[in-house]
Length: 395
Image (cartoon, rainbow, N blue to C red; front, side, top):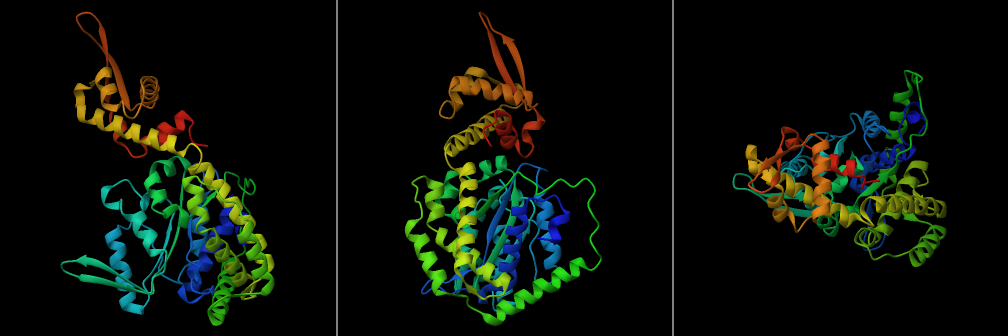
């Protein structure tokens, strides 16, 4: 945390990126030794804030500088098929199908392209760290075999894009219950002119990290003290439960997240076992994460999803109409399942203000009809996010 004090990142980003680094470093051989269902340290973490406010990308690039040279990190675009093959190759080389993502823009991994649509489902399946996993593969390669699966994931996005990417089907599919969404719009402090780090500072941090990882690997499975177990049991029996899709899904894995945090804290301080204080601090962190995530996906999330679907439908109709444009009444008929008359009027006004459409009038025999024509701006990426931001439906 001291190493990151020179940068205008959110303190929560620094902390969660450090947990991801610990999980990436220790690998599959270090886990919380819960009977019958061990908890591995394979974090899936997404940092969320509006663009430029809390230096999400800076937080990710900074933690990558510490991990440099420790393991292969995937930082670019990877299709589901490429990931399957990559895991197979890693397993063939070293016996462990491991992959570590650190991608500064979530759109790189969960883009809207059709061939990327299965990525949430694949990541959901890989999260469970199977001892043996097989995939049909290709005609040329044949069946892909992946043993001792271990995948970690770190990325960042704006809330408005998350609303367009994480639809209700993704929530119901279990992806979001496995992800820790760190929502924070506050930098730890404003730094007009950063202080230059000492030349050996990064080296010292790397040495400390490598020493911590080596110690953890030497200990192996992480146990829990009597005091830690008592506090965890008390938390488990008294925790709140909810019925909305997001929180109910998250709470199904909330105990895993807590034990994963506690295990990483025990690794970090060198105790090698979960104590009562680790559970206490971890439970506060989990509560903060759940509340922040609910602001994104809970409450009126279904309304957000409805708007996204409507925007995409209107966009498709306008693009299909081409330069001739489409008459307002015809457009209303095509999107009536998505929007009522007033909602459509508001949406078209916003799209016009964003330069995505042209509005023109055509005189008929007894009246004047309103037409809409798409501009090139409607073809660019992020249309839904831009319109939602204008509508102020994302916090």
